[in-house]
Length: 183
Image (tube, rainbow, N blue to C red; front, top):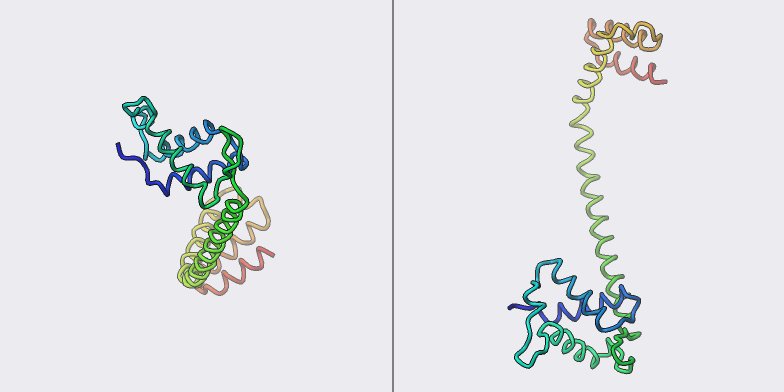
């Protein structure tokens, strides 16, 4: 049986209490901590059910011991009523500080990523202009092939302009005609 590290368990106790509103019964906190570690495959059903020779549950005893150590740095309230675990103001302040730091790191990463994408986008626009002209040609050819296009005046105009352009080979004409068509 290899249990999660003490620091990891302590952090999950704090997170669980935060999620439960800052105050909860011992059994509810232990259940939340157990579910967390079982969900990430750091704890098995066998680990949770294991008992010491004296009959105490090994996992619950471990969580209780870690909770007792958390009273010293004032993360948990030592004056909470029996069976209730409470976060202290220091714990709440710690959460806000950590959350603010995490958020600032995520924002910084997002800004850097946007800058990288912006640099790439300039290259993509230049590289894809030829591909875009090719797609316009393909769409125009599909429109020309369609019998119903002739019934729609704007499409007929575009079709006829494309036919003239494709014969002349002047790509500027098709762009001008496409611009006129869109307007």
